[in-house]
Length: 92
Image (cartoon, rainbow, N blue to C red; front, side, top):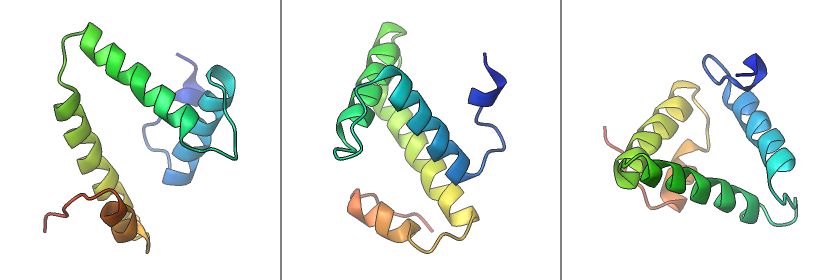
């Protein structure tokens, strides 16, 4: 794997930039519609999980846990708004 695509020890901004690079490279990325290409990427991840007989819901739960924890760890002021917009419940 290209070492530039590895996400371990990356900041949230660096992770977002890598995802945008992936979206621009492999998907019909339109900056005016930031839901289309990420939605396609997520659908592909779901296909990948189904292909390997893995639970989409367990994966989403794990992703939500990482998302909220990483935003909290970096003390980002808008992490609670992001969580609320998605209807996720924060555990204390």
